[in-house]
Amino acid sequence: MLVVVIILIATAVSVPIFRGTFQSTQMTDAVRSTIRMARFARSIAILKQSDCTLTFEEDRMILTSADPSEPKTERRFPGDIQISEFEILSKTDDFSETRAVHYYANGMNDGFELTLEDDKNRKKVIECHPITGKVTVDE
Image 1 (cartoon, rainbow, N blue to C red):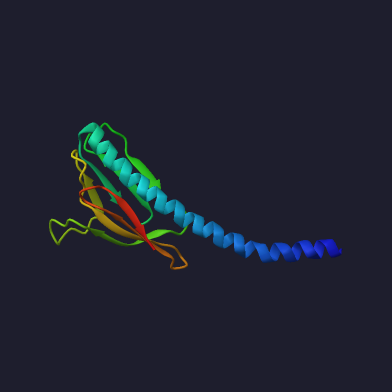
Image 2: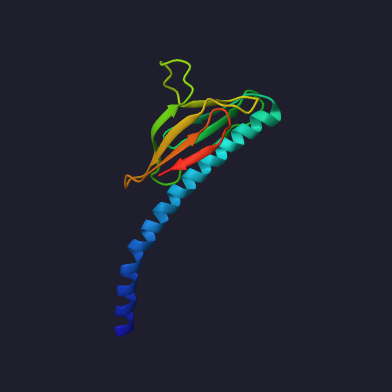
């Protein structure tokens, strides 16, 4: 009986620790997925010499090519992670409310800065440079 009580106490202590680790793993996965999709969009635009668009919705990203025969690539954010802020860095007009980033055949893009946030208000800011396509992450 004593062994069972000790195991229950150890389990009760360790479950919250693992829950926090799981949620931070989801944020890391969402950040890495965003970086990979941005790099993939740039690569596809250069390799196919055709423009493509990476669209950000609240809980997912969608990559579409200018060629309608190409399938869309979609990636959902894990868990409760959503986009809380989004900005296109090379705004051509102040009226655009879409979260679409265009990638061009020359390797350039519109550039973007987005903030991912989870239900515990943990945030990660991801920025993609419009000329180089380099993607950086800030806490």
